[in-house]
Amino acid sequence: MKITIKDVAAKAGVSIKTVSRVINNEPSVKAPTFEKVQAAIDELNYQPNAAARNLASTKSYAIGFIYDNPNAYYVIDMQNGILDACRSQGYELLIHPCDAHAENICQQLAAMVKRSRIAGLVLTPPFSESPAIVNTLEQLDVAFVRIVSGSGEGDADPNCLYIDDRQGAYAITEHLIELGHQRIGFLCGDSEHHSSYERLKGFKQALTDHQLKVEPQLILEGRYAFESGVENAQRLLAQDNPPSALFACNDEIAAGALFAARLAGVSIPEQLSIVGFENSPFSRQTWPKLTTVDQPIVTIAQQATEQLIHQIRRNGQGEAQTFVPRPVVRDSSGPHPA
Image 1 (spheres, rainbow, N blue to C red):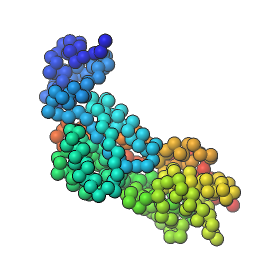
Image 2: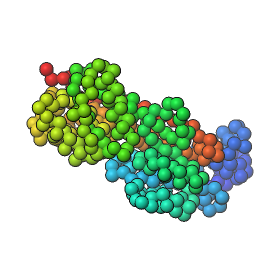
Image 3: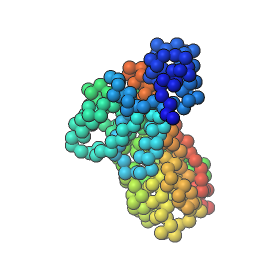
Image 4: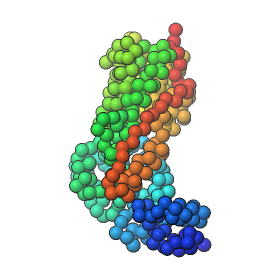
C-alpha cells in the first residue's frame, strides 16, 4: 500500500498542512516539530508526489537540466547526481538537450522555462559560461546554478558552483615534475570551454614555479575528443625532441594519446608518461590505467542541485561553493626515462 501524506501526519501526530510545510522546508516550522515529522517520513519511507504538488500549488517542484555535451559519461553522471538530489528533496527532474550554438538558443530556453514551469535550472558548460544565457534567465526571474571552472576567490557569484581546475592541473603537473619530467606536452580541450584555459593556466604555473621553461611548441590546441588526443600526440611524438610526458586536458584526450603511443611502439610509462583529467570511465578502461585528476561529476551535480534548491527555498539567497579536484595516481605515469 502506498504511503500518503495523511499517513505521515497520523504517525507524527500533526496536521497535513504541517507535514506539507516540512516537505517544503518552510522556515515557520519549529525545530522539534520538523524533526518529529522528518522522522515519520524516514520511518515510513514517504516519497512526495512532485507532479501532484505542481498541480495543487503555485510553486513548482521540478528542476531543469539543459546540456550540450558529446561525452555520454559526463551527461549520464550529471543526470544521476541531479536526480539523487531531486529525489532526496522532493523534486522532479526535467532533462532538456539542445544545441548551444543555435542562433535562437536564448529564445529556445525562454520558451522551455515558460512552458515547463520549472523551479530552477542547473547549467553546465558551455551554457553556464554564456553571458547571453545568464542574462536571459535573469530577465525571466528563474533560479539557476552555474557549474563553472574557477577558484571562486574574491567576488564569488552565489549562483555558481566553482571547480578549481587550475589547482587540479597544477597538482597533476607537479606530480610529473616530481617524477623527473622537464619537457611536458599539453593537449588542450575546446577553446570555448573555460576549463581548457584554467587547466592550461595551472600547467604553466607549475612549470614556472619549478623553474622549468614553458615551451609553446609543446602546447597544442585541440578538442575534448579521443581523435584530438590521437592527432596531437602523434604530432608531439614526431618532433625531433619529443616530450617525456603528456598532460591531456581530459581522459578522453588522454586515451587517444595512449592509443597513438601504442601505434608508435612507445611504452607507457617506461618511455612516455600520460596523465588525464576528470577521472572518467575512460581513465579506468585503458591499459595501463590512466593517472588523472578526480572530478566526480555525480558529487558535483548533487552539490549544485542542493545549492539550487536551497536558493529556491530561501528566495534567491544562495552561497557559492568550490570543488577542488585531486590527483589519482595510477599506472600511466612513471619516472623520467634515463
